[in-house]
Image (cartoon, rainbow, N blue to C red):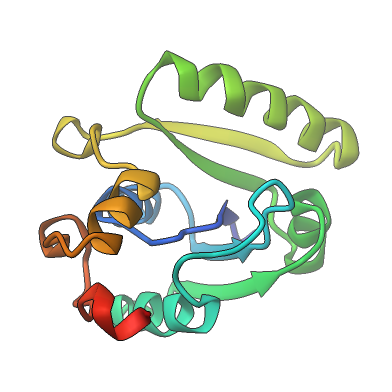
Length: 158
């Protein structure tokens, strides 16, 4: 039986830390689906969702076991739709664990076939957060070191 995992997130933007989690997940799963979800607690995205889909697909153009989907439903429902029995989550610190553990429990309640696999972020990526990357980019800082793709300067976005 094929082991399918979903790596859900808002990915605003998708960072080298996210990329590292996906690459490491490929050793565990037959297929990894990157699910870009609409987060109801975040009012507006900084980077257009279609731009992120394009950029992430470019990163994995030669990796057919990785795909990208956009969704606006419960992650547990998305997993059922794609026959995924696993969610992948990266953990940078204990604060991430507390937050992710709560979500994991709810996903398991909603879909009893769904297990969450936590991967500890590689040390070189532990300080990278999408929130910080957005702020640096917004004010003209160079973020290329933190992203697995190229990105236009902030002046293009505003």
